[in-house]
Figure (cartoon, rainbow, N blue to C red):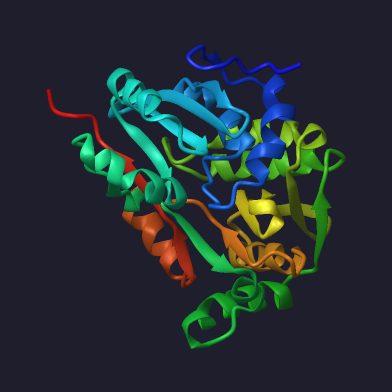
Length: 295
């Protein structure tokens, strides 16, 4: 029995929708990080996410952020009238994937809308091999930090499961305690994700130093398994090179069927953008936006 109602009826995103959404979203080819059940669920309160089913191959999500109301479409392109009604009622169409952009650009232009590339929200893509090896001159500093950790500490990498999720929670608490106010904004989402390890498709790894939990990463396979999306990566700062090490350890643990690692967007944060660029992305998951029309 379907939990999600047919358009135009919306319901708040809930855990009961996992069975309906995960198989569908997992096979979407564009690799948009927002188009995963976990990102919808973990950010449901922040954005007030509500969802409706347009067809078996198309869902629409609506919400609001600092700029006001918005919606985005996951899957195929709805009928022109449905898109027009959504734009009229919700104003801004976010997270338009490359495939939807290609399908709707001409129609939207004819309707007087001007889609634009949303660089701040585009996901960073790295090849699995580049993060697993950190080869080459451009990544030598990252490689040196990772190797330094590897050679300095008595470490062990284990799969992150419900059995050791509490250890990851300890790392999360230490990470939060070392941050100034406002820098631990995703703490609640991290904690919720750890609680859901047993009932979702999340996969992760945890690093121990002398038996003490020191770092962890958590993500999921998307784009029919050809891409791995890293949702979270946390560590205890006292270990030099720990972030470079967990980043590389995650890439090394992935199967060769994974071509790209998606490390999500920078949200226009210059510090985060610089940090992501230093790993030399192979490309981006393009996203577009149609702004609300001026009245």
